[in-house]
Length: 107
Image (cartoon, rainbow, N blue to C red; front, top):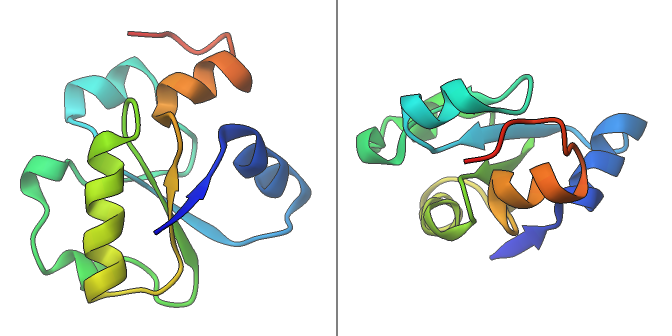
């Protein structure tokens, strides 16, 4: 499984170097606290095989959760069942808050 750091993702998103689908697998209550603009929300607790039809096949996918554990599990599943270019956001949204956007609420 591939990983990407918050700083690497931020750089690629701001420079337009890559086309990513951001897949946030946190629960609804978590995404109401903070999220990355443009993210697709699919709580891990509700992921089923139909997810394969809802994520764009022509883009890399970056899977996001709070600390990177749930997203690693989903990224692995996606890699095995859907896509070959799936990244886990190392450290999750928590690491993003500390290294990229300290103004985002933390929990």
